[in-house]
Amino acid sequence: MYIAALLARTEDGWEASDTELDDVETLSDLADLAREASDDDTVIVYIEQEDTWFGIVRIDGEDDPRIYVSDAAAAARSSYGEILTREILGDDLDAELDELDALDLDGTEDGEPLHDGTDEDDDDSADAAAGAVPAAPAGDGQVLADLGLSERELRALDSDALSVIAEAVGAADVLEAVR
Image 1: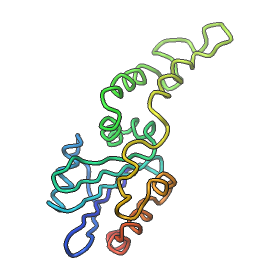
Image 2: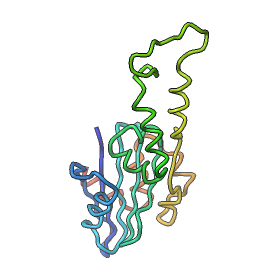
Image 3: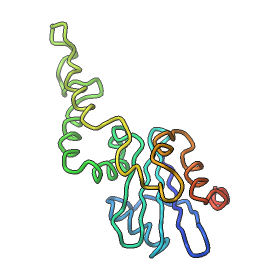
């Protein structure tokens, strides 16, 4: 389950809204959705998947989106997170995801036995593929620094990150009204 929220800065202050991501298939779709909320000012799109990872996409007018994800490996395994990590990690992610897709859940390739009779596990290929996408924050850690949330504070967030972010940028009251 995903949580998605838009925080849009307007001349009257911040506006918050829940948003549906059903029609979002690319970063361009997400940027267009954000720009509909506020053409010229800052819009922050917050996406979270069940306290596993969260992502922030910041749109400032027509500038390119700035992106941050709390856990690139977890995000890369989800549909919306893959959009964000693909943008951060680039074309290298395609090869890494293809390698992960070729593995069964137990870390072996389709039809391959769990053990080959040696003392070594067949998990080496799964470990290598999983290690290709860092299980760590990725992207622009300074994405909210000018709005009151430093990179250090952003990297320390885990559960209830949306509330902390909204508080830091001064949008907690409007977010609470939407919730």
